[in-house]
Structure formats: structure tokens, C-alpha cells
Length: 120
Image 1 (cartoon, rainbow, N blue to C red):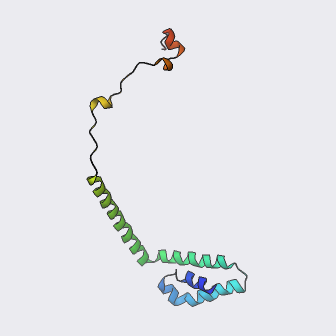
Image 2: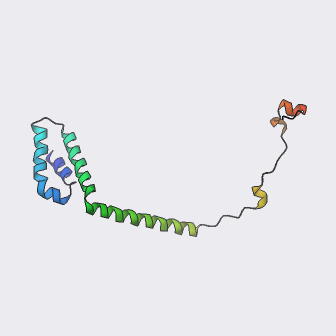
Image 3: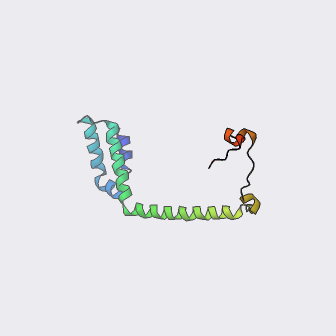
């Protein structure tokens, strides 16, 4: 169990680990041993809090912003290269765009069509 707690504490930022890492570990072990708290719940909560604090730190936000911007620019560059290297589609001709009316087939006609009645 101590290894899981130590792994969850590694998710915290370095400053928090150096100041409060041993206290967090002792507190988690005490919650599990003395109070009978579920070990999985304690470790999961430690991990979630560690990730939350890491996401709130400035360094992580800067790294995430740079990574997001770099991947966006890179993705756009790759899509532009792919679009430029693909063959151009054939131009549409006018007669392909216009809809041609065809007479109704015998199977498509209603009894009113067959009798020559035109609906208003």
C-alpha cells in the first residue's frame, strides 16, 4: 500500500512534495489503518488532488499552452501540405448541375395521373 501512496504523492508538484510529501504519506496510512477508510478511495483522492494541484501550477499551464499552440500550428501545416499535394477535382460542367426533368415511369404514376387529372 505504501508504494501506491508514494506513487500518488508523485503526482503533486515538486514544491508540495518537498514540503508536505511525508506528511501526506503518513496521513494517508493513518486514514487507512486507524479510521478504516478504503485504501483505493484514499489513493484515488490523493492522485486526483495531486493532478489538480499540478494543473494549477504556472509552469504546467505554460507548458500546456506551448504544446497546444505547437500542435495546432503543426496540424494546420500538415493539413495544408496534404491539401496542396492532393489532385484537384474535375470542374463541374453546367449540364451536370442542372436538374433534368424526366417523365414519370409507369410504376411512379398514381391513379390520378393515369386518368389525366391534374392536381391544383
